[in-house]
Amino acid sequence: MSEQRLALLELIDNIERLGQFQDRIDFPSNIREIWNAFLTDVQNLIEIDVCALFLVEEKSHEFLLKHVVPGDKGKLCRKEIELQIECGIFSWIINRRHPALVPALAFENVKSVVMLPLSTVKRTLGVVLILTPVQESFITHENLKLLTILTKECSLVMENTLLYERLRRKHISLEKANKEIKLLSRTDALTGCYNRGYLNEVFPREIKRALRYKHSLSLAMCDIDHFKKVNDTYGHQCGDEVLIKFVQSILELIRADADWLARYGGEEFLLVLPETQLENAKGLAERLRKHIANKVIETEEEKISITASFGVTGFDDANSHKEIITFDALINTADKYLYGAKKQGRNKVISGPFPA
Image (cartoon, rainbow, N blue to C red; front, side, top):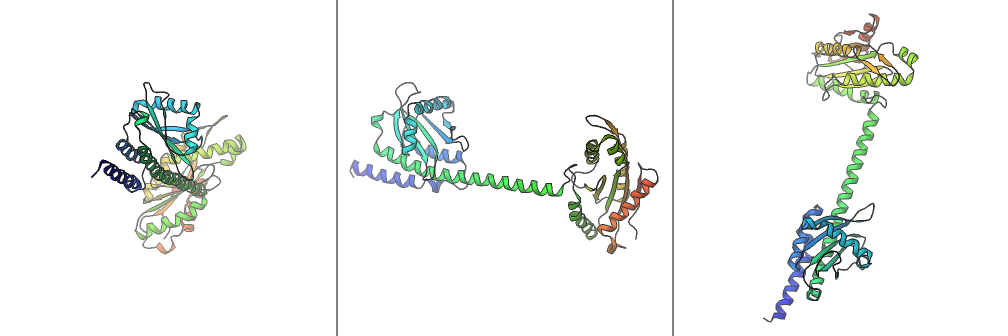
């Protein structure tokens, strides 16, 4: 078989192999994996000293260096691109969307630079800069043709990958935004604890779950003592700060992964304690009462001390009266015990079982 025929068959084989570049990349992929596969194919086609990948940054539209081999040639590659831009060659290559062979401007000694625009019908993605020791006259038309095929295939894979990443980021951002919106709709705007809507939605489920699995459930209704006096004396802005610090004080002592606090209205809050026996709930409320009473709340202008009263109820064994344990019934019972704490002078904890 003649050398000419062998060369032709080798060219056809290379064209077929490079045309299957997309098939060798698992999707979804990432830019580094695509770059490594591309670099391997380039090294099989032409001798290289340096190979660098520049990608267009979405917002600034600048060509930013992403990968370079060897790793210490990044500065020279940036300088090469800057000089090619200054002399007008770079924009000519990008607009033609076709590989070009030009003299090196930043690298010492006589070198040739092959620039491969990474582009599709829709847009320019970037450019690959190849520094080769091969003299310009020895780089064949066939080599440039094969590099063109490889670059087009790589551009398609890279565009799909970038599009996938952009859509994934948007999905994550949208998902995050939806979670934040949902959280805002369930939390009190001032204090950050749950609001009445969340209480109405979730507390009935807590009751049903406790009854189904025969678990304990306790509820503490707490109220800041003489809160109207705080507003009248220091102003509503200080009153808001007191509410915020009050909630923070409670959250410091409760179980973050189980217990939760909801603002019931004004200065009244409900503390839901799943799988907590009444005696333990009473002990927690007493610790909270002392914790709040011993704290000094510092605002920009004042130092304020407050106290709080607690009404605690719940059930440990609901079998005998499970039919009457409802959302409203539990809250009304806790409210009755809270009223008793206020009647006895405030800054107290009054507790009792849910009535049979």
